[in-house]
Length: 304
Image (cartoon, rainbow, N blue to C red):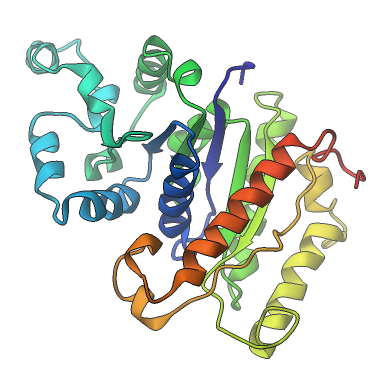
């Protein structure tokens, strides 16, 4: 990633259901409300972040379906225009309208289930060419990329475009699986010299409320220790994760707790006036993120 104005952050885990949509949506809203110009790039074929934000902004998905019908989703940016039909369709699209204004400082390139279709290097190059042509890395302060819970072209492209990545995770018996797979894949990517991306940190999501000073319940404490042991120690005679991915890897102090009403409704915390602690936790997390980015040498292994 070249030294552009935008701070580009990929949000990813190789395990689904860890709160990735919740984290992406609420971080984007908070960053934008702090006066930053924010773009969300939804590269997850499930496009849950797109759905959450369109429902929050418009109370329905009607606007999204209008955009999809008009080819104004991210899928169009991958379109192969060598065939006559595709070229004719593409010619009718006002490409700049694919960047959709949700709020003054918050824009999105909407996701699309059609991304499940196989992509190749040519289509990835088309996406990158459009982003550079629109100068998004110069226009925005932050670009958040919602990645799929799998390793493939979308994820590696997102990481190639990014300065940092952020890992949301739950604390349960499967917590280390996605992170272990992710560490293996990131090690390959970093050692190949394709990227010098740094880990912003790990966010513990969907925690059960507890009065314990540790901030996690007794049931989740063991999983927390297991994950942090993986971060810090040698695992099965392999290098620690931080050494493998050439970046400090630490959990954030801020933790995101689960509330039953929230878990069954909108993932947008601003819709829950009865739970102001949700927005406060996102604000605290944003403060931690910006502090880590601004702290000289923070990401170097062994530095404090």
